Length: 213
Image 1 (tube, rainbow, N blue to C red):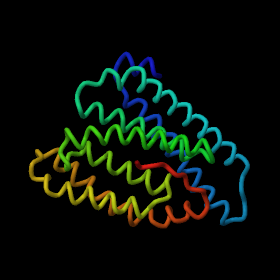
Image 2: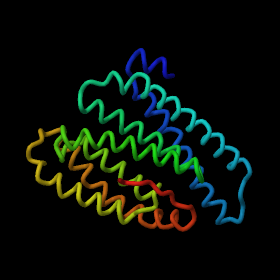
Image 3: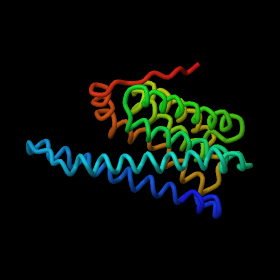
């Protein structure tokens, strides 16, 4: 697939592939919840989950190689650079979700580094209310809550982003304005939908530590 992306620049193919695998894992998780409630744990679900996880990690590694060797070095526009660094962070975040111990910590550290690269660009070059900047902020908030096990930091970070973005909203054109308004709602939605999930994960999965200095 990476040859197709290199030739045609269709990184959307990668995103669709990753979305499909993550959707499959969410479905399996839901089936696990049902089976546990019925005091059953079908072996085929475990096998299928492992298969999808292996495939997702392979796709992510494929994306990371293409980003490092082709997409990031050739990016010229600020938004393109942010998009690719964010994609790199997203891929490492997806890997971290599936790993434990040192491998999880390593993936989390790489996630943070990639998001920081993207952040260093957006704070200098892109409006606080622009969708590109807000998408990065949303993903970093998810990273803080779900991977680092720091939901409070995620909430504080999201609120700071919201405060900064509100002052710049009126400077946007109609389409970016609509997308930014949608993204500004996401932290509130995440707060409602994910707070309980985050706490459960913190209780059941050892969090990793990444330096912010």
